[in-house]
Image 1 (cartoon, rainbow over the protein chains, first blue to last red):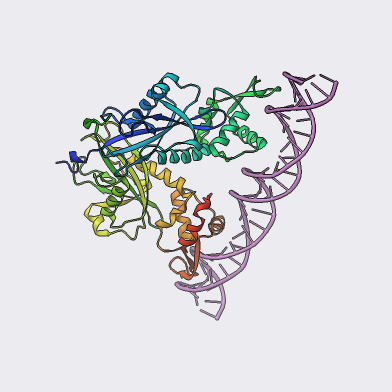
Image 2: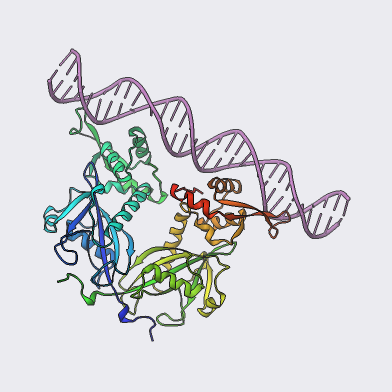
Length: 229
Length: 229
DNA sequence: TCTTGTAAGTGTATTTGTTACATTTAATTA
DNA sequence: TAATTAAATGTAACAAATACACTTACAAGA
């Protein structure tokens, strides 16, 4: 005899994704305008229900792919939300994930199909259910994670300037950083390759492009390096 | 018409609790010997199913209370585990929580009733399902949390010596600390009250007892003080 | 009562890391 | 060729973290 497995205790388990992107100025979140019930017409996170043949990670990846066309990007489970009345239709627990993607690489058609739009953190509208809470939690987590893991690179194009990287960190941490100190700290991590190429769009002089050195990073990962900005 | 709410997608949602305690020497975890199926006779975390009228936090509190007799102790959601075959009986997702309790304060009768036992971290046996993974994740989280939040005090009796506190941190972080540096750091946080009382059991000289100053701590909490040990 | 043993209690110098800060360079455009 | 714009670069002052050794209080036993 099995204890506890009462069919009436089963619940819907949703997965909602906070998708972060960066556009050279601002950190942004991708939201969809719902054209289905409940809360049709309101903004919300992209989400879906866990299927019986997939894990939560799978579901998050599927949901993200459906909206952006990309797979296998940085993604992390955030928290499971379970307020009794969080979903008015049925008792639904939601496990939230946050993902960070290169804003240039998503599939524009899909985004339009879902009436999706990028919102700067400062302009996030009222979302359905507890989605605003999820976004806030994701921002806090992303900030903390940034000091431990150099995940920021996922948000930039393959080649980027120091200035872009600094702008990104400033957007994530929501504070200004000193240019020289920033460069020194980044260089001391020793996980970037300085290219013999310049980006000429930003100034007449041009600024050197850098690339993330995955190999070096993988070697150092174990050392648990902490980047204090 | 509602999208996605298909009854067959519903799952069992379990809550499993990693319960930490400290006995002056070692950090320990409370495990139960299952006298019910599945995996009867094996060691596991205390757990249960989420009921329709409670949140995950509620469920974690209920489960913890059932085993230890205590309510309202430090407790935090850890992670939701969802491997397809993690539970052989039925598709079950488990949200794990970890709790830290004063090892002296639990209800001994309840513990015996559940065939529960405290295990040092080094001696944790094979557990059912993915419970070992949960415990490992909880340990990592507890270690990280310790440097941000002085949650360690929850594990000690109300009055404690500096040496006990140091032993506790050494057990949590699994490394030796310098006595003088430790005391200086703890004092610099300024959240302890030094009592005019000594504990005479540890030495002939006796060592002063301290108490956690909840009021001072609450005031400082906002400053997000970081304790690097 | 004096010697011995045990853990408690205490401060500083050195090293390391963090911050603050200003000038020169390279190229384009007027 | 002068003016403009952003890029690139190094150091000194300050703060924080670490390493480290001797004295004190008391009890127990000689």
